[in-house]
Amino acid sequence: MRRDQDSRRLVELTNFGSNPGVLKCWLYLPTILAPKTPLVVVMHGCAQNAAAFDLGSGWSQLAEEKGFAVLFPEQQRANNANLCFNWFEPGDTQCGAGEALSIREMIGHCILSHGMDASRVFITGLSAGGAMANVMLATYPEVFAGGAIIGGLPYGVASNVGQAFERMQGRNPPSVTQLRSALATASSKRAQLPKISVWHGTHDQTVRQINAEHTASQWLGIHGLSGTPGTVEAVNGHTRKTWLDKNGKEAVEIYLISGMAHGVPLSSGAKVPLGNTGPFMLEAGISSTARIARYWGLAKDNDVSDAEGVVRSGNQHEPILEGIEAVMAKAMGYAKSTAFTEQSQFQGHTTQGVSKVINDALRAAGLTR
Image (cartoon, rainbow, N blue to C red; front, side, top):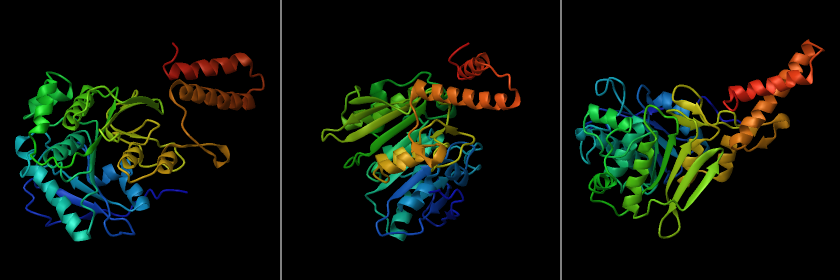
C-alpha cells in the first residue's frame, strides 16, 4: 500500500462571503464525496501557504483515504508581511470581525455548497495557524466538534506585536484566572464544547512549551476539569497526558514531543507515511496528522499504525520502538551496517572496530561523550 504523494490540486474558493479579513480560501474534496462529509479546517504557519502546508502535513492524503474534506484558509502578505495569521490583533480575533469572520464564512459556504456535516467540523494549525485555530475554537465553539493546536498559543493573551513576541517566549504570562477568563468571555455560545488536542516540542525555541500548558489550562477550565491528568503515558518516546469529562470520554489531551523544535511532528520512515519532512515539518517518529484524525473519530488505529510503522526487511511492518530502545536499536543497526561495509573493504576488521562504531553512533545520539 502506498499513499499518493502528489495530491490532487487544491481548488480556490472565491465569493464565500464578505471576507473582512481579506484571506484566500482553498478546498480539497475527496474523489468520493459522500453526503454529510466531515470537514477539517487546516491553518498554515508563518512563511507558509496552504499548498506547502498540505504537502508537509499530509492532510489531503488522509482525506482522500478516509473520505473527508479539507479547507485551507490562506494569509496574504498585504495583511501580514510574514504570512502569519493575525492571532494577536483584536480586530481579527473577535467573533463577527476580521480574519475570524472570514474563516467562519468559508466554513459556512462549504457546508451549504457541498452538504457537509455541520456537526463534524474540526480545526487544526501550526504556530500562528495553531494560535488562530484556537481563536476560532474560542470565538465560535458551537461550530467545532474538535480542535488541535500545534506549536500554538492560548487565546486572548496578546493584543499587539510586542505582546505576541513576549508570549511566544513565555515571558510575562497571564495568570490561570486571566487565561480562563479570556476564553470564557470569547463567546456566549457554549452549547457544545470541542475536544482539544495540544501538541508541542519540548525544544521549541520559537514558541515556548509553556504556551502548550497554558492552552490546555484554558480548555480544562471551560470543561470544568482539574489540572491533574487522568492518564500520563509514553507514546513512541513522547509524553501524552489526557483528561476525561464527566462521562468518561477524553476531553483534552496534550502531546509533548521529546527533543522536537518548532513544527509539525511526522513519521517519515513509516511504511505508509503521511506528509513530507521539510521546514517546520519535523521527523519525530509520531504522526500528529494520523493521531489527531483518530482523536476526532476520522481515522482508526490501523491508520495510525500505517503512518508510524517502520519498514523492515521482507516488508514487515512493526511499531517504532520507544525512547532509549529506539536510539540503541538505531545505533546497533548503524554499527552493524558500517562494520559490514568496512569488513568488505578491509578484511582485517576487528571487534575493537565494531565497538568504536557503536560508541560513535551513541555519541552522535548525545548519549555518550
